Image (tube, rainbow over all chains, first blue to last red; front, side, top):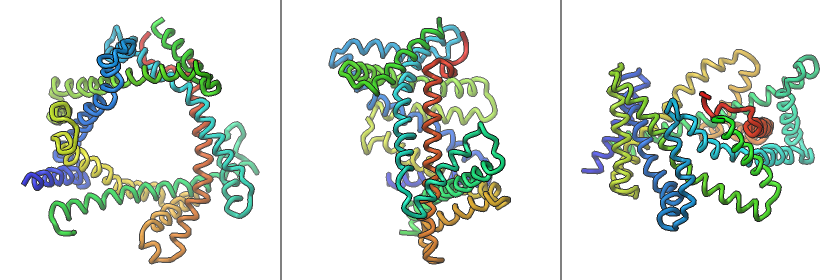
Length: 199
Length: 207
């Protein structure tokens, strides 16, 4: 019985969201508002269990690492973000989080630039490797805006646009298929788990 | 000073982390471990900012009885009840908290994303009605990749799955690689702007 009620609740909420395909209506608004609240409510105990307990409570109260009280107090300064007079105090926990961008300078240069460039500089031993090389270089040239895209340079950058269009098309196709697979999952739930029409 | 001190902190710590990547000395490693402990201890409090923001936005709507304020009550009730369920009965399988996840949150978020299948298709129709050669290339690539992922593609022609794989492995790879290099340079430039105090929007407004 409990399982039937659970399936009914899930089916009702699924149909409420699908009702938006007809037009905006109170059922959709109800489901949307509930989704926002439940998603946020779901995150709170998870953060408490997986972050607050191991990194704040346990070090201070069980391991007696009292130095952790300082970052805990720093973190609590977030609360002042909405204060008109003391809002500047919230900048301290923010800068502690933002300082990690120092790590991203060498990391992004390494993983996104150097590794990709190394992969692009393989020996050209066939038509495909030649196409990959030409595509990479022409797209990079397209994003070089210090020179007007005219004449021969314009034609070269135009080749880059074609490569990008194929890449965007592939990404789009993949995204559509992922969404369609979710849609199939929901329809299987409605027709199978809820109505029992398909197995 | 309310802006300068945070900027000095971020510049000092940021450049220390840049140096840490190139000087893996014990002092540097110990400093980084210390920072990580502190950053992890600070991070859970950021959630309080999200909760406060949500309560302020929806609390104001309820207080002022703006149109559709009743939905704000549902949002806040959902938040309070789910969080309470997690704290009161735990987050293990079989608890009310997990029931809410499995029968409320998960079906709704999956349906919400599946709705995009309809809207992405109509947006695509409006956007790529093959008005130009480039739009046609995009459309053809998308259709071939989509058909290549399903049995229907192979039923139409054995070339469709092969072409789909070729598109993904050759022109798509070139595009992704060039974009990745651009993204990497963009991240580096933005990070340096933050470290040098040129980019300050994260500090918020005020003095």
